[in-house]
Amino acid sequence: DIVLTQTPLSLSVTPGQPASISCKSSQSLLHSDGKTYLYWYLQKTGQSPQLLIHEVSNRFSGVPDRFSGSGSGTDFTLKISRVEAEDVGVYYCMQSIQLRYSFGQGTKLEIK
Amino acid sequence: QVQLVQSGPEVKKPGSSVKVSCKVSGGTSSSYAISWVRKAPGQGLEWMGVIIPKLGITNYAQNFQGRVTITMDEDTNTAYMDLSSLKSEDTAAYFCANGGAYWAYWGQGTLVTVSS
Image 1: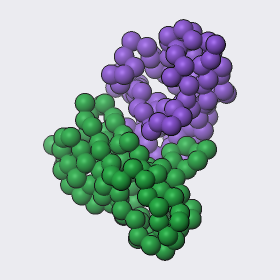
Image 2 (image 1 turned 45 degrees about the vertical axis):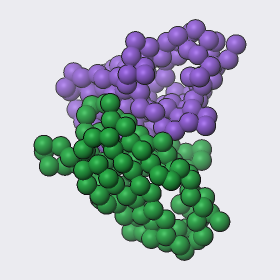
Image 3 (image 1 turned 60 degrees about the horizontal axis):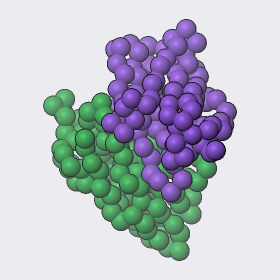
């Protein structure tokens, strides 16, 4: 099974400052169909997870443009250009290149 | 827009089973692929399994093989997740989510507590 490793596991960021989360996969997430099956989710306390980014770099509908995703193959990054208070929660990368999905361990973002 | 509404909280004894439902509305039934994900206290998100009725596919995570069964009643557009041989470590919030490669729509979550 594919293992996703996130770093760091926790972040404390001053509002208005940037934040970055890395996600490394044990196998390439580039499929023969040309798509890369890497996604980012945010779970806020007491809520269901919400989709932020699909296929590495595509923001889901309604996601602010301060969120961006990049990467290829096995190395991926989620960036928040200017953190806001509402961004608090746990961020997860997820892969679905096989029909056995898996998540990274999660990165907890808190505000300083 | 697709909506997923899950059944209410459950309290179960160790060794018993729990069945959580997820009613899907909106979209078209032929587009339904439903996954189940859980979030235990102090742990991260954990994928449990997926059902894709139009392809006749059901697939389960290795960690739950033999203990979880996911089904779909296509007449009522309701998905079910049945987890057996419950242990205290299965205490978690269980979520259903709609989509194939990724999940844009999620249920509200069902808290399952396993306690003697």
